[in-house]
Image (cartoon, rainbow, N blue to C red):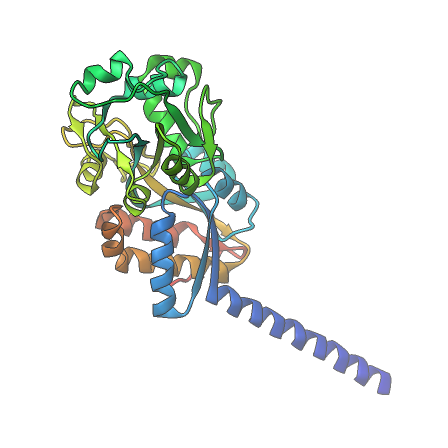
Length: 352
């Protein structure tokens, strides 16, 4: 009997320890959220995370590692959410047992480092941009560039193209656009988060490309617009599908997003859209999560963060020249969470 009592006590203590460990893990999950992926929205996610921490005490740890890495990490379930600027198709999501939803819209912008050239002075179109990255146009004083910029003092210097070295949703948007406007690019290179670049030096993340262009004379690169603003970079004007040369800003991104049919699907690609004011390399950025959540407390904490961002983050997004999602889209996303995100027992993830 004595042995039985001790055994019962040992088992009870073990169960208590297990229970306390589980409670501690749940508490940690509620107070800390980890996500990884796109560098495109990283400035905004960083701002949101800081303000959310001030408001709630919850820490959001976002790893700005590129869309390709973000997709791999959410597939492996090493993070609560992945982030990508390349939307997955509905078929891909169904196969993986995942959902995706948009957070904001922004623009990918060509940037240059040419002595004497100021922001917005250089004009480019998709054909020229593709030919530069194909290695067909090699110098800034090429006749094709001068034809669009007859009064600009372009140097007799070699062009130094810079592109992403990592798997990137920004690269997807850039190469998707080039595939729509440059037939040779579409045939020889195509689109994707990573492509076989004909020319160019690689930088890691939007941060790396911005830094590379900033220190390399006569270079050209492409980055999300908030990096242009943060680093005071020289951007190029781009000719859009309506034939207009436009500057990147939230008005141009809104114009490009006007035709998106979010009610049909969240798989929306917004490059080369119609409209006189539309910025031609516009895109939404997306969050990816598993439908069945092995760690429901962690999933709930992630949803609370994005729910807060939808309700309280628009001004911060606008300040950084991202375009907030329309209210109807936010409402549809919340309905998606409520309908499709469940724990392993089939219970909805409670986030409010």
